[in-house]
Amino acid sequence: MSRVIAFCFLLLASVLGYLHIDGRPAWAPFSGVDSVESIQGSEELRDPIETSKPVKALKNASPVKPAQPSLRMDWLPDTGAPSVHAASLIALKDGAVRAFWFAGSREGAPDVVINTAVFDPQAARWSAPTVVMDRVSAEKGLSRYIAKLGNPVPARMADGRMQLFFVTVSIGGWAGSSISTVISDDEGLTWGQPQRLISSPLINLSTLVKSPAILFADGRLGLPAYHEWIGRFGEFLRIEANQVIDKRRMSSGRGAIQPVVFVDGAQDASAFFRQTRSSSQPKQIPVSETKDAGQSWVTSKDLEIPNPNSALAALTLANGTRLMVLNNIDAGRYRLVMVMRESSSLQWRVIQVIEDDESLANDQRREFSYPYLVSASGTDAHLAYTWDRKKIRHIYFPANWFKHASNSLKEKEAQ
Image 1: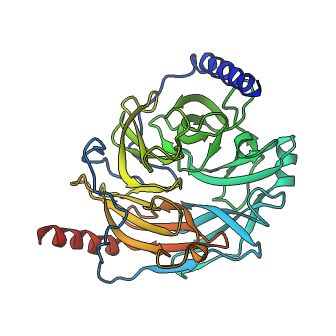
Image 2: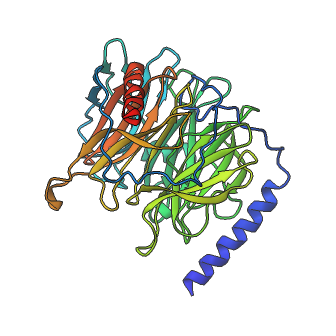
Image 3: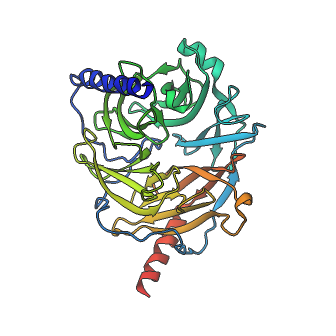
């Protein structure tokens, strides 16, 4: 009976939501920038993703081994918290990179806070961490009870300000979440009053965020979000400052959450999802596509890369090269790789095995998860990911590293 009542509430919320957004401003095309966690714009892509064509299953693929230069690896600052997770990154106007992550006694605990620190590329070190938001501050600013915090995601607004989205829960588990936001005028040094995004005019529950936002040509943001109450599916929110002015379903059912989006053109984009399917369904990456700048999404053929119900990160470089970081195994999160698809190719290839505990016994394997990518220049990449829930690893991939990787791919294909 309770499931029937919950379904009726969800149906009513969907109808009211449709009526609520039907009179909103007309949709603008995408700006051509894949995500707005960077202040650098990407060049328009030369060809769209063609997920209808088979791609090589990458579970046991051997990585292309680029020559030097080497990668730069370090850790986000230690706050003393026993558990850390869900790091995200944004490029700053001076070329530095700001990270956000949550830390506490465990995920979902009342003592969890959202931290931030800045990486100085010249000195190659992180600043001391500071707290952006804790549960008490969120309660005071939002004027409502907050049980827990999670998943900070930064974005660059069209006017240059920084916006941080984060998940708040007032009742229940993550399925009872909503998204809140704060805005900074000084690159994250100080923040304004938190505001709750209203994504549904009825109960406004079960909306979460994990992935970078997309910039529209009119300056508004497109925020990939997801729903976990009754169904598990992706949603695309059209944001103006602290207001949701449109919402569109990106997938359906209970099998696809945490979408990352590649922009293919002014009207076209492809979304790749973390799969949450039943045991009888394929454990690979679900895909949806839009041909009208996100107003409607159609399920496409899966990307034939294994996915063990784990988040992935996506980034497009200025030359059109696309990157993803993911766990390319059927179960567990003990292996993490970077894959690349050049603008002239349809093939995704492993270019770096980042972590791999496959040789260890099951009870000794660690978790490497929740990757996040950003480029500070359009030609490089910064990666952050959860390392066994105890640390956040940061890896810097310089531009010439990708040049070596590309050349190695070409040499391997020519053999």
